Length: 121
Image (cartoon, rainbow, N blue to C red; front, top):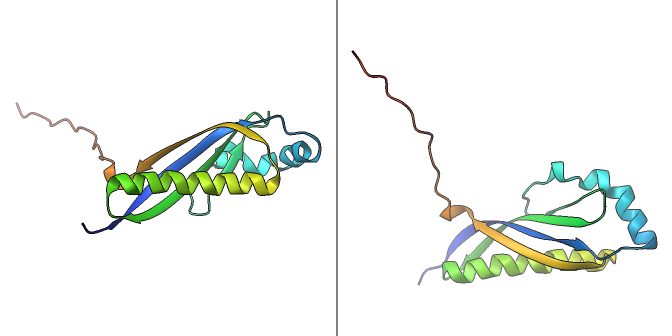
């Protein structure tokens, strides 16, 4: 079987687990730079969270080259989870209850709007 590159939009969402002290203050101070309104799917990943410091989200645009779509799907999810966990651990941010969803752009069907034809009378 020949491998092909598949591109995914992957979201990792979760909850902060009561960050305290300096971590909480750093998140609060940095929140305007991580507002959900600026969420975008990027290769580097976009980290956003609510001002209430309750929920967070990472958005990634991930390209995977695997032999099958099933393997590519799994690799896209794993890649996003590892990247987000590494980032959170490096910042010392406590979390709980993460969830990951991935959509392969090659699998999306584009629905064109129906146009009405005018009927001649």
